[in-house]
Length: 286
Length: 353
Image 1: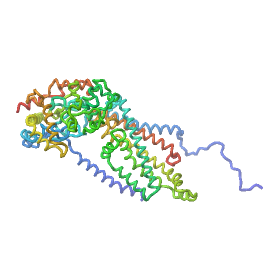
Image 2: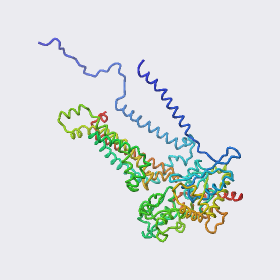
Image 3: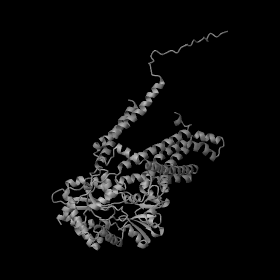
Image 4: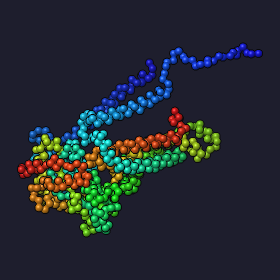
């Protein structure tokens, strides 16, 4: 016997539009308009800024002469005339920054590992890393020059020291910021300390490690360039400081532009690596 | 009342207070760079500053002597002699008004003038080039051609022009054919063979090397004048715009400086005593300054130059420097000689002596 409670439900064959629904643009076109605004507006602002600079509006506002603040056209000309040396020196400085950051980050990670594995003895390492970070590059440069000679080695050492602390502190945080439930689960699996480390702590610290790496990309460029100010015969920092001394300001500004481009590229590469390595993290999935 | 509205009211006055504090601090810390060239009253001495290109030493003896013996005071000037250093560029200090007078190399001056910096030379302190390249005889580098593949040092920052000119003359590319290295201001790199060829000032670093156990026979000295790339060195320059309204001050300064240099050249021991009072403790010895004074005297008043030609700029030598600068890439356009230097101030100064 058919239940009287069940009755066939009629469903509409065609989609019904709610009377109050407004006409909206199809989603793809809306996304394109959004992208144009996102890129177009900053681009337009940048072009306007450069136009004002070229027309000497800032010179008039800040009461500057052309030899104190070169015009964009002069900077572009200097970049074009000296492109091969700028490129070579940019590569030189970037090498110092990358190698120094690699060594410094590795050292910082090991310090964080030690501090997490043996909290009683290892936490002193964190303090040392942080105090090294506080030493100004002005003081580091001559000492590193004495220890490592006047080649790339001294600048790599400077960059390594200045990038150690960010990695140590971030990685340490990451290794300790584990879900207690995860630790309980590992304990229920009878996992040893080393396995806990490998599967929970180190893997969980990766988001923090990449944050520190991104911070270090900028710090490493600064460290490499400032280190070259003091002792170097090559590199963007050397060319920048030398250009200022002989009033070749457009060349100095070209160095600044090259350094900015190199720094941004470096940052973008690390960001790309981050997307690859921590695809599982919520920050990469939203 | 919703919680958010109450919160926003609280931070607004705090933010305003912080802004005011920042603006007040900025306003107070901005000090005007123009600190000389004008007198408070007709009788008060005119305060001027001269920016040297290195630390106090006999290289600048004439100025120190003029100050110590009161020559500047006689002219109604209160002169502050500002020592230089590795990162101080006298041309920039004079251009922005921090100093009224500056001393540096002519090659650097020409480069700055080409970049649009409004400077003009009013006196030539050193009449010959003072820079040489030295190598050890044991290295076998006895001619510029042999620089290829070697490490050549220079302090850079405006000192490298003559060496670059030498490279260009002998077809050496500083980036490919040899290693052109920034030299520190001690001669350790040369003494320890880290550098094969080093730059030295004939009155300073050359004697440092001689004092480190080398005799002149152990060294090859490359005289840049003889090699045809020598440029004039220490000169006295001012900001052109400042000069236009302060010519009298400039004339008085130059007059007193000429007197100071004459005394320094003719009474060297006294000058060394005055310089030793001005040097930094422990930075040098009396012997070193005595040797420096002897060499500097030869540069300020070379053999055959009369006393009243001290600080004069020789047009032919200046033109030669400008030509070398153009030929070897120090400057890209021919320099306007008549605008780059003037002997007017020195001539007016001599009239009062």
